[in-house]
Amino acid sequence: MTLELVVLIKVVPDGKEVFVDPVNFTLNRSMATNVLNPADENALEAALKIKDEHGARITVMTMAPPFAEPFLLECMSRGADQAVLISDRAVAGSDTYPTSLTVAAAIKHLGKVDIVFAGEKTSDSSTGHVGPGVAEFLEAELATYSRSCRYEDGFVIAERELEEGVEVVKIPTPAVVTVITDSNNPRRATLRKKLNAQKKGIIVWSLQDVGLPSDWVGLRSSPTVVKKMLPFPAIERKGKVIALDMIDDFVKELVDSGIIKRGGN
Amino acid sequence: MTEMKKAEPPQDISEYRGVMVYLDSFNNTLTRAALEMVGVGRKMADKTNEKLYCAVIGGSTKDMAQEAGLHGCDEVYGFDSKDLAMYRSKPFSDILAGLVHEKKPNILIVPGSKNGRDLAARVAVKARSGLTADCMDLDVEPDTRILLARRPDYGDSTMSEIRCERHRPQMATSRPGTFATPEPDPTRKFQVDVREVKLENNQLKENIVSFNQKNEEDITGSKVVVSGGLGMGKPEGLELIRKLADLLGGSVGVSRPIADLGWISREHQVGQTGETVRPNLYIAAGISGQPQHIVGMMGSKVVVSINKDPDAEMNKNADYVIVGDLYEVIPKLIESIEKVTGTQSLPA
Image 1 (tube, each protein chain N blue to C red):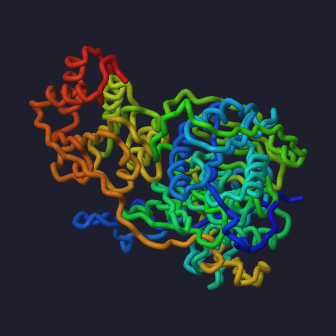
Image 2: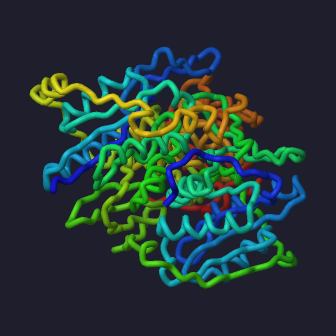
């Protein structure tokens, strides 16, 4: 039986193009263009590697307004076989709970799925909640923060990069794997695949298609709500200017206050 | 498994009392982030005059439970099993969700380490409640007992206050390094309840094949961090940064563009998309000081900025500013530190 792989993606503002206004020190988002979330590129590549080796059908999926379509086509141009866009006005304002719920319902609607890939986090809200949330709803095994993974006879063997070291785990499918940013080199699209993708088009599902009532999602069914925006807590710093010929005195000051210790820290 | 249903709030939220902290551990030792969360949890529990519960899961939790108690916890729950010596997503989340169901805490905070985030995201779904990630400030409103979870906005110099008003427990994670660790009090009274856990086979499908402990420094625990930014101009600049860091017994940090360029691994990146540090001394060399960077080091005790540009944003966030080329300033600084402290630096 063909391996069924799903790759979850999100379209985010391009962090590198985010422009900080030098006068009022705020972010100008109007300059930012949209890109595929960087870690999701690595998630797609991780799935494509398994397809290279074992053969597989890859479905790339996102929950977004229709502006995400070109990004889904881009994923197909790199080697994904089909793309699903979950698009419904009712999901607007969803936090990570209803997002995980909707994505899990859409994956279930696809039918048999062996491995779901997602980026470790998105570069905009960077919660990393959706991958584990989907695993929870699907009763799938989970390997988060994977830097490489392979498939072997019904199991995923993933290297998880943690603070203390690298852990290798072996989990049976169905499994959710979240992939860390920069963990592989995403391949480029090919012209032939690009043309095929355009011919094939994108599958668009509404909430009804995936079998969820509209009052289960969206802002009103999200447990968390952004209540207000605050400036960063101000930390007063002295900003004392040290002239180049006063560095010795400056170092003495730091040693006297115990900030620099004799013989290293 | 959690049935696919909406996040239904509990009927009676007044049943939910107290603050619970999940204690992250490695090799039967609490992480520093776990103790940071005990400190924050204690403050919130005092504000609402409620108990602070802690949960620790591992191969043998007795000593860790004791440590949590001394650092400020009222009731510590330990869960022991030989199968739980290492973090495993399913059994850990089942156990914590079980304790949440039993104790009904009003607030549950979890260290935002990688395993902590994995765990918190699953427990939030199991409890059908709300979770806010990467909080840089956690507080509670005494009369409503609502958690005020404040997290930085993407690339912006503002933060959002996020509330979870109807669902319980109100959950949050914070990155390791966000808060100071509390001092232990050897006279503190607290209760410890360590339970032996029996796990089902379907909870143990995840097989840990191997673990390779890293030798690489963890910059979040360093007392001194010396960071380089684009002002270095070339990868060799990091050698100079390293020389100063070594002399001070500290770690090397970088701003995001340097990690993006691949001059050094991501573990060294300080800021919103990297690590959060709070050393005694933070030296920023050739760093412009974008808000994303400031968020990652604002808890530092003393900040020094070395920058050619006297008007760099970084300078406004520094206690000391040395205006000049870092290739000129750092060697002077090294020479002066060697002279004043009598320490010799290693050849670069």
